[in-house]
Amino acid sequence: MPTQQHVLVVPVDEGGEFVFAHALDSGIRVWVRSLVRRVDERPRRPRGVAAPLYGGSISDMSPLRDFVTDFVGHATDDPAAPLSPGRIRDTRPLVARTDLDSLSSRMHFSYRALSPMHTIGAWDRAAPELLISRVRGMERADVGFFATGLPELPVGAAPEALPAELPVAVISRERAGHLSEFLHAPVGQVLHYLGHAARR
Image 1 (cartoon, one colour):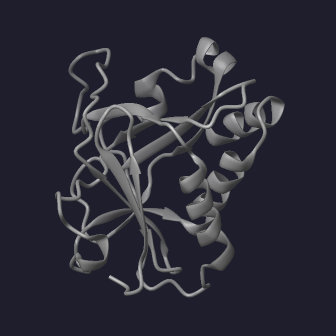
Image 2 (cartoon, rainbow, N blue to C red):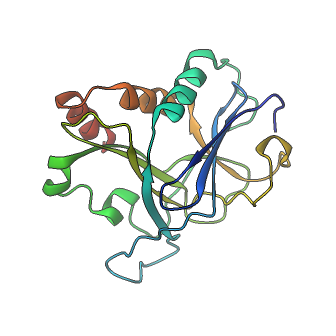
Image 3 (tube, helix red, strand yellow):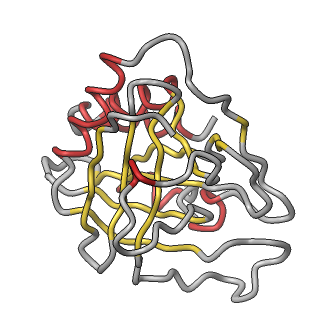
């Protein structure tokens, strides 16, 4: 894994945290650590190799927004590691698992879905997915999320010290740009448009 990592730890209100890291190269690496709130899905037994689905909220999106924007603005054109597109096997995509594509959800929320995410290293499980949501029509500092299939970062492990061969989920440069735009967008119709674009 590259040296001189930029690392952001984002606490989750319900318990646990996200760890984001980048070295201005291939993309933003993403781990979760001790997430608490598991979503009760319908049906209760998702078919296939579906990974557990977690949900919750982040009270202040500013650090994440600034972190993603900094990466987009300064990343180099030469990736340090090859990215592989994730592949969702034998399970519904995250948007379908959360029912966010329903009319009632679209009326109140907009979202940016990273589904599936790119990966570095061998990946033998359900592909990682991350969805960030915002409430439409209100200026709020918080964002919601759903996450599934993301690698767990052990407590006490520092991202810059992990072995290079460790599989990791990645937000590619292109998707980081889309996410930055979403986090910077004002509420209202702009968010509504971006929400529709996220589902394509």
